Image 1 (cartoon, rainbow, N blue to C red):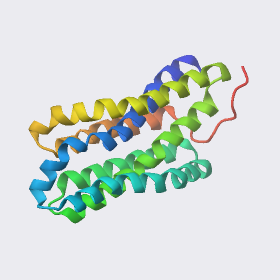
Image 2 (cartoon, helix red, strand yellow; image 1 turned 60 degrees about the vertical axis):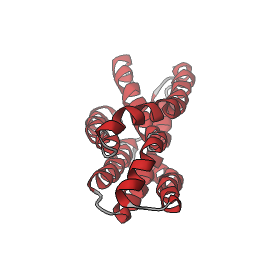
Image 3 (cartoon, rainbow, N blue to C red; image 1 turned 180 degrees about the horizontal axis):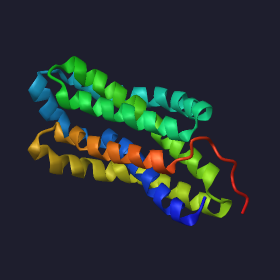
Length: 192
């Protein structure tokens, strides 16, 4: 992979990981507002939070295997697309059921983002660039847990739906970038 394409690919992957990880942490400040809007119990609220985590854990191996079979481009697009579809379900939800389904779909899609990004880095970058890139990828994931509550607090005055609506244009940009930059098939690692 030429250095110019690599410089564009890494921000694409890092942004996808940040978006997926942010939605684990960004929802915290919104839970009381969601609870008030839908009149759900604290137990139902924990189901809403845990649906994302559970489906992310289920999505990770399944979408990673899908990536192995179809290639990283399609798998990344599907992962981001599912994440965006779940975000849209949350935005348009008028009852708690759609909230649960939206968080589940969103979490399942997020499950593919990190492993696909890590695999692309491992398969496309030369060995001397892999370690630092994977380190940054892990840092981005961890950074989301500091940024998420802050962003949630900043967007919450506009309504809790904005926490999820903001994902839609970002997902569109990521899908367009994936079409342009991600390899259709896994490439053999370069030994240079």
